[in-house]
Image (tube, rainbow, N blue to C red):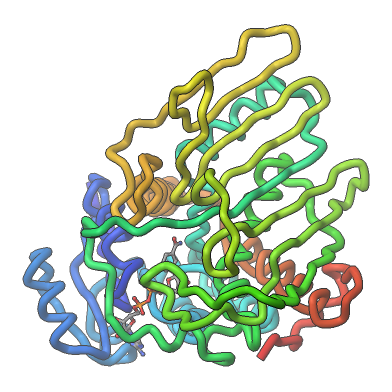
Amino acid sequence: METLRVGIVGLGLAATPHLKGYQSHPRAEVSAICDVDEARALRFADEHGIEEVYTDFTDFLEGAEIDIVDITTPTFLHAPMALQAVKEGKHVHCEKPFCRFTGEGLQVCRAAAKAGVWVAVGETYVFTSAHQKARALIEAGEIGRPLQIRQRHGDWIERAKPRINTGPADRSWRVDAAKSGGGAYPWIFDHAVHFFAAAEYFALDEPIAEIYAVRAQRAGIEPQSGAAHDPYQKAEVDIPIITWKYQDEGVQGVWMRAERLNGKYDYMRGFSTTIVGEHGLIEVLGEGGHNLLWQGKQQHLVLHSEGQKPQCFRFDEGGDDVWESDVSYYSQGHINQVRHLVDCIVEDREPDYGGEEGVHAVRCTLAAIRSAELGRPVRVGEIGEEYRAY
Ligand SMILES: NC(=O)c1ccc[n+]([C@@H]2O[C@H](COP(=O)([O-])OP(=O)(O)OC[C@H]3O[C@@H](n4cnc5c(N)ncnc54)[C@H](O)[C@@H]3O)[C@@H](O)[C@H]2O)c1
């Protein structure tokens, strides 16, 4: 049985969760790594027993004998690195946001199709166990047709001592207009792809057609700092509320931000979603989620189906490595997604969340930013291939 050899480029926060995914798959092995910071790369290699270490991406692509390139570098490098990798005939697993404008993402998709390799985008929100269970319950008809997706974003609280290496102290690329890809909205650009991906996942893949985002006025709000791995000194120009319509206009969605970065308080932590259906409702926790209670007990998912007793579900997968949350996002979510790509390569089938899906989530995010700027709803189709937020 042949083992797929993997090379990881970019050894910051996202690299360890990916490594765990490959390490836990019997058909995969991480044999090479690359980072411009040589000391970090050597430490990572030593800690995890990886033989080949590179500090230059082109040398790594040409020198390492690998089948999969796993890209966990800052966002501005995603599409250029993915393009180079697929042209070398490598399968790619690339962190989100897949690209900074849709044209560069589509170029990767076309090149991958030509080279006969798979591209998977690291959209953890469709691989988190609690979210996958919610989707399975919806598919099984437990709430009828999903009609409204309500997402709330409470605080992400970091563990006093994270269980994995959370990467370099300098993350200024995350607030750089061009490197983050988000212009004046770097936080939204980095995270909204998750929100839109989850919004379509819970709506059984109904595509989002139009987005209306509200820009905050922030009068009187004391600036706060974000999660420690987001280097925000002050509340950025912010988008606290996003609403959207799907192609089927009978279905709508909303995302609401209520966390310390913009001075609000919400007892329910992290990302959580209420999915309202024709005859039932699901409440489910996602990244960093905490405080979903049913009769005084912590749950990860509660199903209310008309005429039935509520059903509660927990996914005790060891808690989170970074957040104070017992939903295992920075471990099992990433592990699920990486293992899925390896399975797809072994079985030669298309990954569930590939390049086109990654591009679509970026297009939705750009529509949200454009809507906040213009103060009017924006059709996702208005976002052309060259449109950028920076
Ligand atoms: N899905 C998720 O839950 C999740 C979580 C964290 C990060 N991410 C995404 O992963 C990406 C990386 O984020 P992060 O927080 O891990 O970043 P980070 O800043 O922690 O680490 C980035 C690493 O890339 C290295 N690097 C920079 N330029 C390089 C180059 N040219 N060649 C090789 N290495 C290079 C840096 O030295 C650093 O070690 C981002 O796009 C982010 O949005 C996703």
